[in-house]
Length: 522
Ligand SMILES: [Zn+2]
Image (cartoon, rainbow, N blue to C red; front, side, top):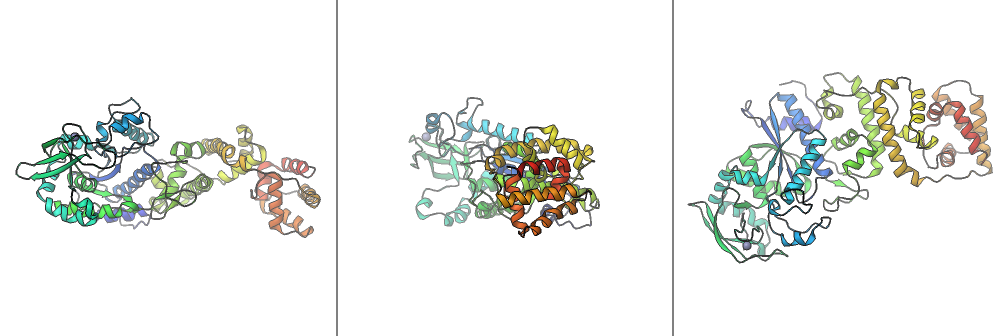
């Protein structure tokens, strides 16, 4: 075990996890993430898998032990309501209350509703090259993986009830059971009610007459084995059952599940094992600070993010303090990209033993394939350049950038990708908000003077160029703040823009002078 103490949060998690073991275990240390296949995988799913992967990598680095990440899909969960964004609404309504793995696929592509969603999840995780083992709940139940745990829950039914019932409302307690038998006649899971437990032969008796919401029932009475997928347990118990059956050592969850995790923890202790180590992370918020709802899922998707910015910039953003609520909206794109590029710049000069504490180390598979990037070219700079010269000519933009940073060849592919994405961002988010204004008489004079002073200057020092607008503002008895605001509104059609010195160097003096000619004669 390495002696250095790393401070990044995945290492802290990894150290917590390491304390669970006296010695090296003889099976891979198991991490889990859960997925509810009632809807499509989304940015929350992505963030959870990414964060768990980072802890896993820190843990592997610390211990050199093998690990495994199980991506568990709860496809035995029942369909509770008809999702409004799905086709075949009537068909879905007819199947309410059935396990998702028994509901037909409304898209007609897979053998079931959840098979469709599971495929989407796998495609999604594969496209970002996550390493995981997929496990369907339906297969786990039917294969008998969970049988031993189910038998314990049945044997300890009174104790399970004693843990769960006090957390429920009075009227719900009467009919509650941890077991949800699937009705042998109608196939529904939320229409059944357990009427007797037979611990001696691991069966339960039930009646299909539960009236809840719009789920139909058929009146069937039956007795069924609790094994091999005939019965599912309610989800907090289910969570504990998974931890128990697969020896899960680590799992993180959203802040909204803290109470559930406590209950599941009590259940798994009752069953005779320890709950996994974990972290509760803060949820994502929208632009106004409201919780992003899964079912709405509006706006920001990963597919759209990568059309505007590199995926790594999203990961960089997600990586920062998981205990802090983060807003996800388009306004965060430029800063996230620039933070990521700053991270890349700094990584190169870090001592190699300190690199594992850098976000960049996590983003590129434990620092294995970190791209070289040493430049002050960033997303804001490119956006400003596009603002100044227009968004339709990538070669022109690249030419400017090459002149600005002569070492660009060394990381040309990164810059080209950034320019392409920045052009999309500019077109969709910046251009529609631009408002160029016409300068008044005094402002025109100031711009002319700026042109004159710039033309007179013979050097090429960024700070010296930057001082020119300050001089001009002083001559006209104008505050630098007002001067720059005017300059950006007239030249860029926006309130803020690049440093004047950077801008002139980027454009070249001649081009900057002719631009000033144009705007001072409007
Ligand atoms: Zn039934």
